[in-house]
Image 1: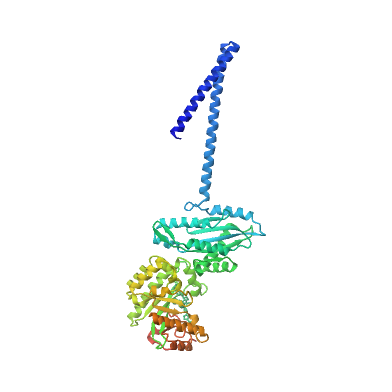
Image 2: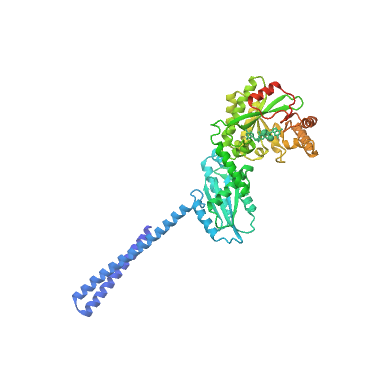
Length: 513
Ligand code: C2E
Ligand code: CA
Ligand code: CA
């Protein structure tokens, strides 16, 4: 209490005390005058004082009680607020969101209303923490919380489940355009964030489920949206996907694969195989692409097409990817010792490049194997190069400086913006198999291959035609002037020993059958 208020209260108390005394004395005087009895006077005075003190005491107790009650109410409110909110962002936490969801569900008119629940997971948030520090990561989460909150009205709920996972749900009148809200969320999050002098960029993957009954629990609805989010992360990040029965089944399949892959590296379940890259005219082997094979304890003979997207959607890709680079360098250095001075190419996913430390992984692999950097090639997707991610760009530029070659995998299937080809100093374009398969039957495919080959010539890049299976395809490619090919026409991916034999024999043309 302020000193001013204390002196004011004291003054008021004194005035009341004087007034009470005057009142008691006057009442006692009246009693004396009326009864002319000194005992009566004393009795009236004493009982008046007792009554007066009791009155003051009771009043004081009531006011104390009132104050305490108010304090208890305020503390309760604070405790409830703390129990309901996420301490970092101030958003609803899981348990509060659950109760809001249940309340919303009870009020739902199943004829016309439904709940749209969005599970939002930031893409590779860990690299923000690695790149900057945790303070920046925390600030980013707070900004994201504010941006998400702006997208819903008072009835909508935004909650942080923990880490970089958020849930947002709204009551919607059917029909509701869930795509619009999903796009708004992606847009709101992808705008650059200026934090503590740093410029952080992030995207998110979203899963959506639509609830129109009062049966499904909040946790199950959240799980459905989580599965849809996982699907969206696997296909392409910065995107959204709706929950469906198929997605549920894919998710369960991925979960089984992930369980089987636990401790995969320690259990040595992988091998690295090598598919020859061959001079289309002379059939001489000029290099190899390293391809991951799950050779031991593979539950359903899963192919790379089955398990690599699962690995790429988790942190596993970093350790497995590092092992691939290391192993490829070691094997290639061995080929050199045997007199085969050819290069090795490894597939690198965008996610690997977003993580700080990929550059060091490459340096260490070159160092321990003794391989010259110019014999190592990284096969990247257009998606990796098109991203405005500073970590990807800086690591690739540093790798290029070492003398490492870059090639674009599945070229022609992705983007039309090709500015990155020259800005990132790409060395090789790998023409996607789909053009080669169609090269004899489709004039479009023929024209595309011819055009890309011409463009590569002008830009001083190499071309590798992927998936060459027939001699007739090879002939067309030779006519176009394409120099290097890869495909079952020459060989499938081989174990390192078989690959060395293949190079040694330098077999001209194999029958793919
Ligand atoms: P990719 O990089 O496009 O690799 C070429 C794929 O085409 C390989 O499939 C190869 O076996 C297959 N292929 C080669 N020639 C022919 C042909 O003439 N006909 C047909 N039908 N197919 C041919 P694979 O080994 O199943 O790999 C599939 C994909 O998995 C690869 O596609 C690549 O994206 C990914 N992958 C493989 N190994 C790794 C790895 O170590 N790391 C990463 N991140 N991805 C990998
Ligand atoms: Ca490849
Ligand atoms: Ca490819």
